[in-house]
Length: 575
Image (cartoon, rainbow, N blue to C red):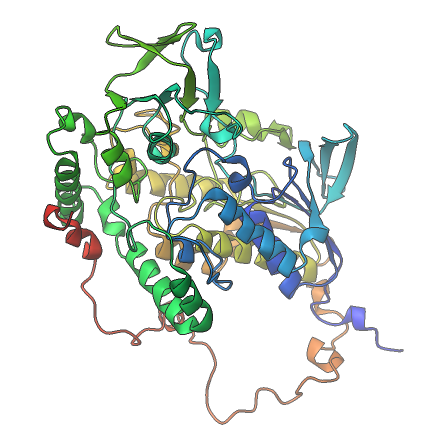
């Protein structure tokens, strides 16, 4: 009998993959699949006409990344020619567009396709995904073995629930759906909100508007810049990064080390938390000088409870400008010409910009149905997930930046990469074994939630503030942040815990053994004696030894653990 290659051990069968979202997560997944897999199909749907996700949708004045530019890239794909330390949204989207073109990923992407529903067929063991072409209005159905939701959590504008908003006769804008053609010159502009978007908008529009008014219901902790002062790189600096990659690597590493050194600030009552609070309060008071309402700019909750805002000093300085009015109150209702705040004052405006963020409920925008349960209904009641990537009772489906991902704990793109690697390990196992379905066990997810709830008691996200993790409700849901640092998350996700998953097979689970022939024997260029070596260069057998080897233990001089580092240098004397 002739040997058939397709019957060798671990033969990779054809697998159909659908991904929803062509932002940073979906693009990363496409790259990882193309780099390591064969015999698969990938279809990426995105409702927008172009790729980029949140960086396509967010175009408000001053919109920029709040992470140093050289660190807002995939870890393996640096960009030496960023124009500034904190680049604008258009330049960031350009990075992802260039990445797509460089790696020929456009072939997988179906833009202007809105996913309207997904349903699991338990008999066939596949997902049915319904989409609508927003250009032709045609509805189609696609079928896949693996469904991935890479829709992010910063893509659904949250308009303020304020009575009378629809009666305002001026121009209404939202920071997450901004009309860039609007001319603000000489106009009176009212900004509602004081979070990350508002902090960027105010300094950008202050020089051109007639008057800017900003309603500050709750202040935020403002951070100094992580790298250098937010500014444009000079042509000489950019050329140096291009010609001397070691200089670029030095900057990237320095910034990343800083971001990965501060997780202790998120621990309640830690010495780090106390010192950070003192440093940031001193900095705010120093910048604001004789501003009479400075106490209103000092949060009464822990540093980090709400998203920390780097490079926010320009916002504080803008509040002192003669054409800017800070309103330390809450908007209670709108009129045809402006807004009434809780203190009874009426504030006239030509333009209202709602910098009120996003719907961070995690409830999907389309029905996702398995075993008679719609995830929209389930997550409207309680968010239960598995380590940011899995959904109990929903087979063969994964999330990227799902609930309990390390979104504000440190660098975000490396977490996306880790999630893509994790999902690919499941696709690999599905492709090389006779697997029908893979589902996170409900009892395991419940235990994880209980662990998270216990950990949150000692972390700042459960403090008395509105944030994305509690869906902007004090004493609301269990915060959906990862209960540890980004480095902690990378180690937790590195090796799949297969016993946390319910894996069902088609037929004999050992069919993957094939006809007794290895993949090595089917490769005519492979070394049939590859295991004969001069020394033992195998990976270590314990997790601790393996992970420390990955972290290059012993390669750096000893450092002060959990130190404020550069933040401590931003005392008032340096401001």
